[in-house]
Amino acid sequence: MKVSDKQVTKEDTTELGSITVSKEVIAIIAALETIKVKGVVGISSGRKAGSVEVLPKRDLVKGIEVWMKPGEAALTIPIVTDYEIGIFKVAQEVQKKAKQSIETMTGLKVLKINIDVQGVKFRDVEKKTEEKKIKGKIKKNEGKAK
Image (cartoon, rainbow, N blue to C red):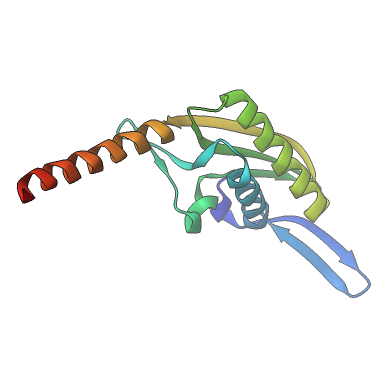
């Protein structure tokens, strides 16, 4: 099920009334923890025409899938990682951080968090390439000015 189903994931009753936690809340917690992990470029919306799209911050939860049983949760988080940092290390850190936060904040038991690494970005390589292009343009313009 996708997060957009907005079904209630946990319901608890106190003397003052009921408390419910939606799938979207679980996905938001997971998304916020995921993007904090060093080596995560972003959360993916999936593959389209051979490329991977990284979601903008306002749409992070759209890529995350949440499944529920009473008092329990399972998730799949599709990510794009930085080439410079080990993929498995990054994925394990996402699992650890998301699980810890979801359990602490909601009281749900997280059964599993599947990490789907859908792409790798070369941040430093892309940055250096862009810097070279800019320097080349500056030198070219300086030559014209003389």
